[in-house]
Image (cartoon, rainbow, N blue to C red):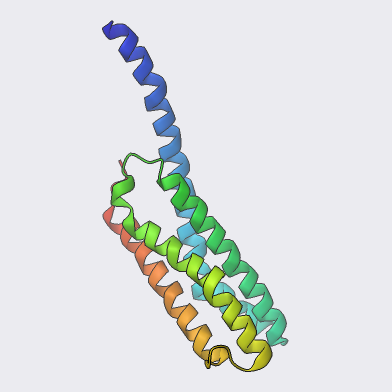
Length: 149
């Protein structure tokens, strides 16, 4: 009887190890791309391209990719044994989703019409940037504090 339980536990432990490893890789990929996009990629795009609209379009697409990568990371985190310790990660993914699905349409409207809900593109962009920075800090805290075992 004990032997049967031990055999059943091994595949479960193996699955958890695979999930944990996949999560670590995805978290590192997400954190690195999240921070590098904010620190130098977006800035480099605007310096390299003289067309601000094109640069903004490229940067916007990259920020969208960050959102989906964050959502995928959060989804895998839900399968982790330590999922309750990852509140900052869920908060970061939610902030990026808010940027993508709530603020981005207002930014696009404000850019096209001069304002959205009485706020200029700059005000929407500033709000979006603040949420992005908070998401970056939340991911930093998760990595800094968590053992993830």
